[in-house]
Image (cartoon, rainbow, N blue to C red; front, side):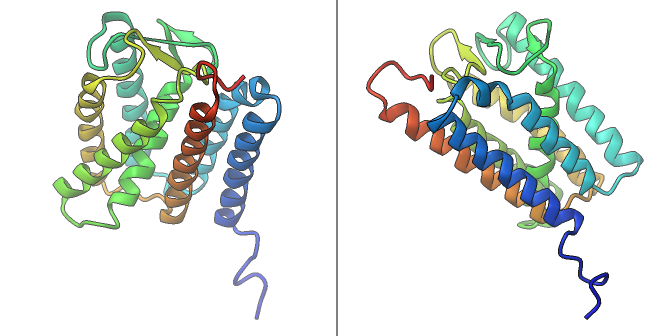
Length: 224
C-alpha cells in the first residue's frame, strides 16, 4: 500500500492531534498546574482552533462571506449586550480573552465563527431540511453555552451582574444563532465533519471538567 495514498499525517489527523493536545494540556494545566498561565492562553487556543478550522474548510466565496457574517454579527451582538444590557442581560468581560473593543474581546467574534461552523456541520449530519438543521445547530450552541456559563466567572471570561446567566441570555443566544445557522445551511458550507465533532466534544469535556473542579472546591468558586 502506498504511503502517499493513505498518509498517516493527513491534515485532518494533524488538526485533531493539535486540538486534543491543546485542550487536554489546558485542562491538566488549569486543574493541576499554573491556572493563571493556562487560562491566559485561551485566546491562543481559540486562534489555533480557528486556523485549523480554515485548514479543514472548503474555502470559497460563500464560506468566507459566512465567516465574515458570523464574526460581525457575533461581535456586534456582544457589543450591544455589554453596553446596553440588551440581548443577553447585564454582563461584563474580564481580562482573560484579551484585547477589547467597546468592552468586548475581539476574539469573541472568532468564537462565534467556531461555534456556528462546528455546530452547523454536526447538525447537517442529523437532518436534510434547512429549518431542522438550523434548529439543531442552534440547540448545540445553546447546550455548549450552558456548560460554559457556570465556569466563565472563575476563568475571568465574563460575569453577569446577577451572578448567573438568566433565561434572557439563552433566548438572546437563540435569536442571534438561528439566522447564522440558516445562512450556513442555505449556502451549504463544507467543513470536515470529524473536525467539528472532535472540537465540540473536546469543548464539552473541557468545561464539564472545569465545572467539576470549581464546585468541588470548598471556597468561593475559582480555579486559582
